[in-house]
Length: 211
Image (cartoon, rainbow, N blue to C red; front, side, top):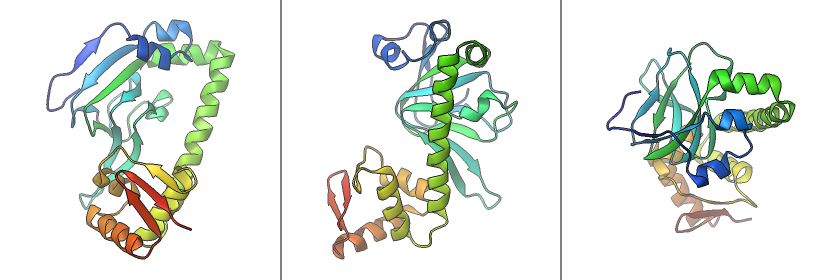
């Protein structure tokens, strides 16, 4: 692991982390470790061999890939939950894992996780359900990136990711712009136009579509 500052590893889980990860089989949970990382810390790089699966407890970890033209492409943003689930079955990472903010993550040894999936039917079913939900989320994102215009992508995001067209943001708009596949300047202009046109309301960090 490399980054801009030291990381702190705890060999035992806090009560809060243990409660959040209580769905894991007991033998797997016993091997979990917590890790505090600073912003811009690289958890893993493209081509490296996965050894652990990450679960994000706090902060934000992103899966990033860089295009030939130098553009940063965000493949996943994990702010609560598993990161890079494909690493369970992959020999190499296909992207970089980078902390976008000070974060707290839990690591689960992949060998132990694979053993639990092979031996614990309830955990296997829960894992399959999680992957199904993740596929739906990725399909929605792929559909959104095909839309032309920043306003169309904003509307799609609020309708698919929000509740009744509303969402509470606890992230910088720059991070949201990356996920939408547009520049943050284009996002600011789109939000301003939609607000002036009466299509969107903004109250602090809360955005709501007006129908």
